[in-house]
Length: 268
Image (cartoon, rainbow, N blue to C red):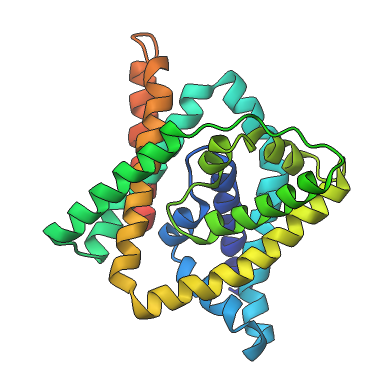
């Protein structure tokens, strides 16, 4: 029984890790769908209060995430290059499949929806209106600091549900660099260490911040999460709409329905 629970945690971590490296997808949203998000934050923050129990929960989950990021980077690069519309459609369905469960669990009023819509518009302006040049690393102090910052930013987008790290990296011109770093971390070991350091610092700080927000401002925090979630789906849809045509619309629709039903079933 314990081995089965450990394996299930590993699988959940693996899917969460895959979600981290898909453009527009939030790994933390998948963590919410799998029912491990808030418990993970709590166990990380109180890790030293009960090391053995917390480690038995976090270790298989973390191993699944790390393995998915390392192995999945190669797979995602291949799928995006050869099966772009199907890969993106799959994750649109997965993300949308989480929304009914979240709306059922966290009811909203009219003021909430106005706030969510205004925040959505703001995010749309940021993601559509801001595009920085592609980051090309060089042997400079700025590059080292910037890679550390990318690690910190990855932590922020990992911990905050609905905020897509890959979409954010695309906006600041760093997605290709980060994906290549994930796919071969030993090729540029110095940058990998700096990125990892920024990631650790960011995770520690953001977990404390998000736990504080859930304790003190849970309703408003979920409004932010829903706005991030809707914006992720919308940006993904804009990326695939031009690639859908009469030859693939039926298979795309079936894939969307299948992924939506799967995630909606998991979320219930």
